[in-house]
Each structure stands twice: as C-alpha cells, then as structure tokens.
Length: 615
Image 1: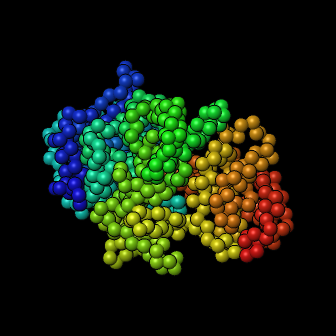
Image 2: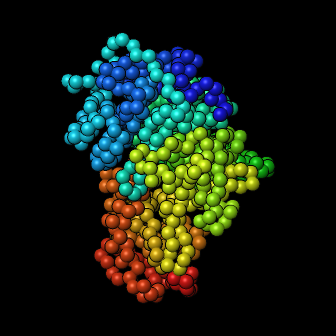
Image 3: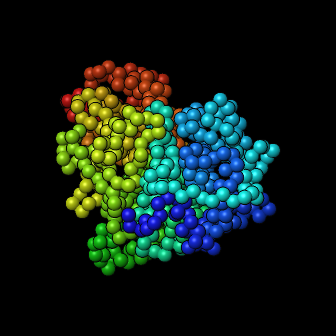
C-alpha cells in the first residue's frame, strides 16, 4: 500500500507521527474553566504522553490483549487518548454515541464482551450503570470527569510505572464499530489494525498529497464513533501531521468555524444540504440584480469546473459574483476553507455544484463501515461530479449484474485490505456478505464508467417494487426532496402499492406565513411537484401525509448516522399511509382521514399514467 511503509498498526502510526510532528498542535479544544472562550492546544508529543499514562492506568484495571474497552462520548481529546491507549495494550476499542438508545448501549456492551467503559457525563453514567451491572464480562465504569469514583479518567493518568506499548500485527483487532442498523440490533463490524491503517494512509496520500499536510486544520464535529470520522478524520489527519479543533457542540458549529478557520471539513450530506438551503434562502431575500448576478456567477463557475472556456462577459460576471457574493459566503466558513469531504450518504449533484461554485471544492466519496470505510473517492486532481470518485489504490471493485441482469450495472463487490474481518459473533451474516474469495457484497447498486469513476444508483435493501412492477429506490428521491427549505424530513412509501406516497415533516423556517393545514399541504404538494420534474412518472409522489412529529434518534426513527429507520416509521405511520390509497382502483377518492392530506385524484391518475395503466 502506497505510503504504508513499516506501519502495521495504529500504535505504529501514532509513534511515527509523534516522532515527526512532536511539537506541532494535534487537537484544539475550547477551555471550560477560567480561560473560557480560549482554544487550548494539545501537541502530538503531549497527546502521546497522555496515551502512555492512560495505557499504564488501564493496565491496572487488568486490560490486556483481546479485551474490549468502550466509550460513550462525543469527540474530545479523552476519546482519542482512550482509543490509542487501548490499542497499545492489544485490546479493541468499542465507541458508542451519546445519542444512542439505552437498549443499544446494553446490547453493545454485552455483545462485545466489554470489560471497561468510559462515560462522558453523569447523565450517561446514570442511564448506563443499571444496564451493565448484570453483564458478566463487565468490570469497570470510568467517568471522564472527576468525582469520588473508584477510577476516573484523571485518576488513571496518575503517575505509575510505565507500561511499554504492545505493537499489534495488522491482522489483530483494533475496533468493533457497531453499525447503527436501520433494522434490528446493531452489528459489530470487526476491523483490524491493517484494515484501518491501509485506509488512513491511502487517504493521506490521495487527499493531502498536493498540499503541505501539516498546515491543514479541521473542525471536528462528525462523530469518531462513525467509521467516516473514525478513519478519514481522526486517524488520517493524525497520520498527516495536521490538526483538529473539536467543536463544542452541534449548536455552536457556526461560531466555532469562525474561530477555528478550518482548511478542511469532513461532513455528511445533511450538513451540505443545510448550506445549500441557507444560500438559496438568502438569495431569495436579495434584490433582483443580486439574484441575477448570483445565478449567472454560478453558471459561469460550473462551466469553469467542467473545464470549458469562459467568454469575456462570463469572466467578468464570475469576478463580480465572487467579489460581491461568494467571498461573503466563504467568510462564514472562516475564509480559509480549501475543500470539504462528504461521505456516509449520497450528495445531490446540485448541492456539490453550488458549494464548489462559491469556491469550496467538495470531494464526495463512498464506503461502508465494513470497508473501514472508504472504497472510492473524488480527490484533488481527480474528480467527476455526480460520481463517488475512483476506487482507491489497492482496492478493487467488481460489478455483479446477477440481480439486475445487466453486466455493466449491478451490486458493488469490494476486495482489498480495507475489507472487514466479519461481524462479531454473527457467522451466518458474515458468510452472507463475504464471498469465498474475500469480496464484500455491499448491497449497493452502481457502475464504473470508462474512466474508472464509480456511480451509485441505488441500494437493494431499500428498493421496492410498485404494483405495476416498477422498482423504486426511495432514498435517492428523498435526498432530492430534502433539498427544499420547506421540508425538514421525508419518507417515501409504496412497496407493492399502485404509486408512491410520502410522510412529510415540514420545516417551520421555509413555510413562512403558512399556518393553516390546507395551506401547508398545498405549499408542500407544489414544492414536491416542482422538485420531482426529473423523476420518472412512476417514481413521483402522488399523495402526502403531513406530520409535525419529526424523525429523531430518541424516538427510534433515525439511526445515529441520521438514516431513516423505515421499519420503525412504518410501525408508527403505516395505517395512515395506507389510508392515502383508499380503495385499490384508480380514479376513486381515498378514504378520508382527519390527519391525512391527499393530492387530488387527477394528479394520481393524470392522463392514464403508468401508475394507473400498469398498476
């Protein structure tokens, strides 16, 4: 693997970076005490020293090779210290989200065979303590704050004889990352040191090769418990000599960006969608000449991105748009942001093009927890809008057309050093996704173009068939509709039905003065119709149910990575969604419901559309 050298494990990775970048800043955190408001830095050497001390402390709790150490916490320096101290004892790290359901915490602690668990707050401790008390393998709960407990993070840092770091082999387990799971209980993905290191070092070579890596700084808010943040941000930037400022909270990201002035951001499409919606909302309030300049400037910038020559007038328009509009938008990101990396879900092309046009390059990638996670990525010098980039060096993608009947487009199967060992204690499920020759069957549908760029077109597990035999991939349509400032959330439904309907959570910001249910329904229907013009006729949403009950992690409607838990949403709403259809025959009004808003039958059966003709 390019750039890997003798680095076989994450322990080797830290030791190499500590030796090369010792005095440089690694982390920056907002002071919590007397120096509130000031960012405090931890150098590579300082971080390494903390890891050494905590490794010695964990050894006094009996942590050793093969054990499991967990954490429930948002990103913080202690999170990274605990992870690297665990690796240096030959144990595996098991991170969890603060936002996860308590039953998921209990399942992960039990399933992983966890021995020690770090907790971030008294609230988390009080919830988790009763859950883990009866788990046979569990021994110690360790608060990250100081109190009169048997052991705390700081007490484990106390002076004691040093414990030399174990240097795991590449085949040794580094982490169990539990997938959030849109159905059923979370599954533990077993990632080895070799899996994670191969991915982190390859990304380092591809993403930061054209810049002085040490000059880069991110604002870290993507959870390190998620595979994308875990490898692409934490381990890749640590391997590069770059630094990470840790956001105080999601609510303070906007203020933190202005303070930190990052050069790179790692985020999921939801963040970029909000940027897109915010820019569109701002432009809607501007005077007509500014709106004209914005539109013409975007068009010129997009033409330049496609490497097409600009005329004199276009160059002038782009210069003015950049000077008067785009510069102001970039300033909201601190003014130094060179590029942003999007992963974990598909990014709408219009979103990427807008952000790119205002002068922030967006590089979209593709991967899964099971592939450590990156499989393909757009990178500086090699980018194609609409694709998820070229397959990483050392990784191979095969397209299995057995299910689609098309040899060029089918299930994506991944081979390479980043492919997981398997699912923890789930042999049958491991065999179902890992082929005999080591390929991971992703469940995603896509194709490779003639230039080697990978395109994602759907997901087998999500797609369903309408009554007319047409297949629908709802997530692709939902991602498009969520670009609207009127829509906070949406789930499309239509499995074995004559047409698609949707459960819509409206956005208070986008609806303006609309307060009456009928007015809200009409605005949402018009907006969905406008955004659906490029969909195939049978894909379009024909009827909507409006609810002010948003999808949240707490209610079990969203995973920690903010994907829809469709089975839970349907359990709550299926009855009312089914009543949108009324009787089976087209052309007859659906049964009325006090909470259901139904589009007119004329739209459902417009001119004997495919839905009615073939349904």
